[in-house]
Amino acid sequence: MRMEDLDTDRSRPEYSGAALEDLRWLGIRWQEGPDNGGPFGPYVQSKRRAFYLAAWRKLLRRGCLFPCRCSRRDLETALGAPHEQARAAAGGKLEALDDEPIYPGTCRGVTEVLASASGGPDTPGSMNWRFRVPDGEAVEFIDLNLGPQRFVAGKDFGDFVVWRRDGVPSYQLACVADDAAMRITEVVRGADLLKSTARQILLNRALGLDNPAWYHCRLMVDQHGRRLAKRYDALSLRTLRQRGVTPMRILSAELPLET
Image (cartoon, rainbow, N blue to C red; front, side, top):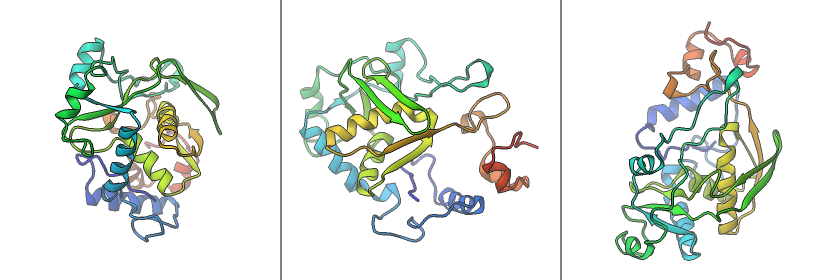
């Protein structure tokens, strides 16, 4: 059990405790975690900053990163479209999600100027840092559930953030660093993160790390075919539990869950 609490706006101690309690109620058990320790602790990402800085520095030394001063609003303006790509396709089939717009390359050519203002070679400073993707290269992998997958760097996804200007490492970098340090051999997650897997494969290669096996499963959706997400005021596991829905009903994906 790894508590991914790097988003300080959404992570609070009471949320972490509730998550552990709800998962135990659902019948999920773990041998290592923030509540019972283990050989690869700490199991809370907010306490693992040294691991992420080490990975960032290695990527920087290998010439894989560049600092970026663009805000999300700057990118949305440059691209002429909202950054949110999530939408439900016809028939209730959920399309792949990508919460990061394809970067237009605005800061790729001004690395030295921005780096000098970022705080030094060993400190990210108050600057976004992006991984420079190999444009045109196809990233391919076999998903244990969905079969062969293929994404083209620079087309399906662009230079992506690995360190944010507020001093927080990105999901991509933190997961890669933690999976390697914790010797994770299989990653099971939602199908909305297929494109993140392509990004993480590039990070693993740049860091000299082995890839785990990947298994992307279908998402739980509401009656409109939308994934159960906070942005849609979706039902949470805690809400379902309070309404008397049994763990077996949730695990078997018996629908509807709202009654």
